Amino acid sequence: MKKLGSRIVGLRQELNITQISLAKSVGITKSMLSKYENDINVPKADVLGEIATRLDTSTDYLLGKTDNPAPIIKNDTWIQLREDEYEILQGFRALNEENKVRIKERMDCLSSFQEK
Image (tube, rainbow, N blue to C red; front, side, top):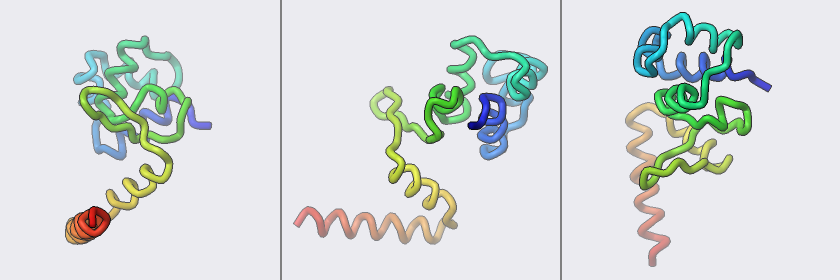
């Protein structure tokens, strides 16, 4: 099981965010973020929440309660994606822009077909 620090590092790097940038946006020092990423210190709940928000994930993911890092916000409420939804989202994110357009077109087609 991944630890908190490696989950922060992984998401930060995936989003191409520097330690300095993340630390500044959360309101902590780069040194403190480094301690979190190296599992030397554990952030307080409010800081953990800010880190999760900046990394577009949930505190549950950072704390290892789920392996799904991709919650979404709907009506100002976090909801957790199901595993199949997460797999589809990851596949979609890996596509180039041209293929993303194709997928969206197919979804629209299937939706209109389903309504009939």
